[in-house]
Length: 185
Length: 123
Image (tube, rainbow over all chains, first blue to last red; front, side):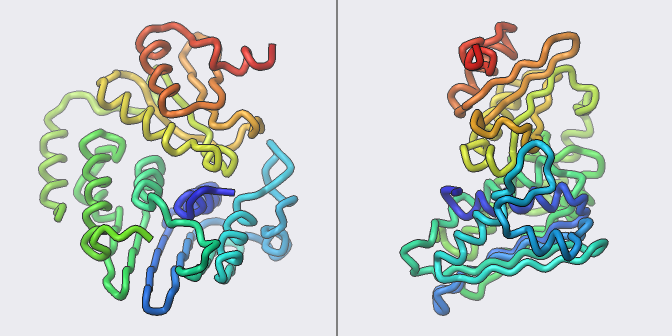
């Protein structure tokens, strides 16, 4: 199992990368009033066939050839379901895939969200050919990062350049703090 | 709050710089396995440590990238060092601390740290 939910998000979003998505939308929503954490990872990648979709939650199914198990989605589902949440995955060939997971915030078995800023930063910087739209909501306050805005400003300059990478990290941290005041869920 | 104006200033500063790193032309590639197995065993802090070190020590001609699962899940986090004309070196069970040693001793110093390599384990 992963040690924090943000690592599941990183792992599941890597599936979107491998599905050749050009846009990945990640939204993380915390609502303490409703005792709910909701996370959606949506891509416009190649999508899955009905057969793949049926098997994707089975740990002994994978499309990989390097090993015989596929634990990413089962881990994530288990993390949600064991924390009193729900897990849904929808997909259509040629259109993309959407993975929804919810967690009961107060559930004793809920893992901490962890370093979600690092997850988003890693995805954005190491997959700069892909656009990311990241939405973080905390008790109704929302903040949005759209890498298309960065790219428009930067032109051909790489996100991996230290100044740019640091800027994105700080940007994400400030955005998070502006809505949750540093509360770690 | 960070503004896009700040990003514009970074851009203007960088456009003055002569060289823009091009990954495909980089001499050395450091590749970190970032599939479920890698992530679950701690690849993210290793990746961050490597790329921060390369940037901070201003090491030229080195690209840090990520890859999927190479089928040696029990040895994750795995870091591969690929240099033109040299054999690929596979470091296993990496930590951020070990990764920094790889930067200092192998990437900068040119000496493979054989005790961290997969060859050492399979012997």
